[in-house]
Length: 582
Image (cartoon, rainbow, N blue to C red):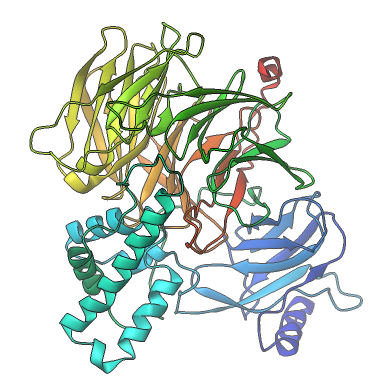
C-alpha cells in the first residue's frame, strides 16, 4: 500500500462523518489533491478556501484541479478552511496535514454521489420540462427575481407532496397560486420604495392562475433528489483559474460590479440604498460612497467611462457620474415623458463596454418605463426621448431593455424583453430603422453587446439561447442553443482581446463562453449555489471577468457578493491604459 493511499484511508476513517475541512493558519501557496475513495485524482473539482474571520483578502478563493486532481492556491490566499465541490460527488472528509515523515500533499476526499441536489444548479430541475414554451414562460415569469426552483421552492414542493389533501390537481395549483400572489405583493413593495416609481414593473409573477398552472406542472414530487445533470460543454477553466468572491456588509442588494482603470479597486452598486461601494481587492476592505440627496435612487447600471464611473438608477429620474479620485458627484435629473417618469436601464457603450456618446456628444439610454430610447447632453442638460413604434402582432408587454451603440456611433441597438424583438435607431436622422422579430415571442432578449465588426450578440433569457446578428448585412448569423436551455442567460459581453462572447446566467450558477469562430461553448461553473448573475465586465488591464451574485430583491435569499474570475490565460497587461485614468 502506498503512503498516499494509507493517508487517504486514514483520513477517511478519522473523519467518516464527513464535512470536515482543513484550517490553514497562514497565507502562502498551498498545494493539494482532490481524490476519490480509491485515491484517484478528480479533475475539474472546485476547491474553495473560505478565509478565517478577520483575515484580509477576498471572502473566498476558488481554484480548479488539473487532470490528476492536483490544485494550488495562490500565494496571496489568506488563512481559512478548504472545501471541495464537484458534480456527482460529495465531500466525505476534509484535507489534513500529512502524517509525520510523509510528503503527501493536502487532500480533500470525495465519494461518488448520485443525488446532485445542492450541487447542480436550479436550472437542472427544469431541463426536461415540456413543452418548451411552458419552460420559457416560467423562466420569464419567475427568474427575474430569483432562481427557479430555489431551495426554498423545492422545500415548499416537499410540503405539498407530504400533504395528501394538496395532491389533487386543483389543490396543487391553489398551493402555488398563493405563492405567486405573495411574490406579486413583494414585487409591488420593492418597486414602491420610491414614490416616483411606476406602478407596473417587469418583476411580477403575472396572473396567479396561469403561472400557478406552470408551477404545478413543472414542480412535481418532493424535489429533494436530482440525478444526471451535466454542464453540457467543456470547462473553460484551467488549474491556473482563480475565482475571488468579495463580501460586503449586510444588508445589501448588490446589482453590478465593475473595475475602472485602477485594478486594485472594485466598484459595487447597492440598489437597496444610495451606496456605491469601493472594495480593495487585496485587503477586502470596503469603503462606502453615498449618492447625494435624500431621494432614493438605487444605483443599478454601472458603466466604465474614461472620466470615471457612470451610473443608471434603479428608480426613475436621474443619471449620475462619480469621479473616483475626488469622490465627487454630478447628477442630471430627467424630466418625465408625458407625465410618466423615465426608467433608465442601460447606457450607450462601445465594444470595450465603455460609455460612449454619439458624434453629437449625446449619451443614449434605454427607457424601460416608457418603452423608449432617450438621450442626454450632459454639457447643456438637454434631453430627448423617442418611443419605440408598435410591432405588428406583438402588442402588449413591450419592455425595452438592453442597449449598445454601433462602432461608427451612428446607431443604437436595443432589445425588447417582453415581446421577443430587437431593433435600431439612427441617432443622426433621429428615426427608427431596423426591426427584427424573433420567431419566439418568449425568447426574452435582455442585455446585448456588439463586436467591432458590427456583430450584435443577444442573450435570449426565456429560450436559453444566444443570437448573433450582422448589423451591416441585416441578417441573422445564427441562434445557438446554450448548453443548458433553462439557464436564463441575462447578458452578453463582447471580449475584444479574446474575441469571444461571455454570457451570464441567472439560473445555472455558471458563466458561458462562446467562440464565434468555432460556434462552440465553454462553461465556468461557480462555487456557490444561487449564483444569480446579471452582468459581466472585463477588467481593462488583466482581462479578468468581473461580475456579482445579484440577488437584489430584499426577500430573496442567496449570496450577494462581488466576484472576479481570473482565467489564468496570462493575457499581456495593458499598461498604456494608465493614461486613461480620470
